[in-house]
Length: 248
Image (cartoon, rainbow, N blue to C red):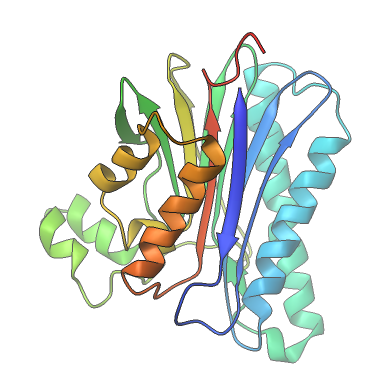
């Protein structure tokens, strides 16, 4: 297995409110995280880094995640802790009112793969050369699509496409959606909406399937393509290739 992650401010924003990491523990279990912060006075940056730091600290304390149920409980407990931390920070710092962050995670062990998300950062798997979205966006537009009030095509260009219905730090309680994912895959991709708003699934697939590129080059190329199209948002990408590096 090989993994790589990268974040970029983009061409329009003055600072980067995204945070991203990939961690591996003593049992060769992987935790991938992407957070996209929001809030004035750079407090989105604080919220996303708080979330990454708290998850990373909790993950590094354990040698193994244990069973799938243990992992689900761990994710739920982690999210509750992070949400409380962000709310506490905002209450102690008046200029931080409204700060929050999205969260998408993937947890890969020898026995299972689970994804979790809050907000509109996305989790995908690559299988047989095709990219499949696992997570579901917590946006107003996505709710309208699910209700049949908007088509997928109308949603892409809707003026309120970025209005979030759920985020860490936005309410006293915040539940993470968890997905149990088939492990017969070739890769795991997590990203902020700075990637998905700029590139289609087909365009992302083409880069990830390029046999001439190393994993670092694939991630870098995805970000370069977003910036070439205007780079209107921060862009964060975390990619883990299941088959690359096996036997090395």
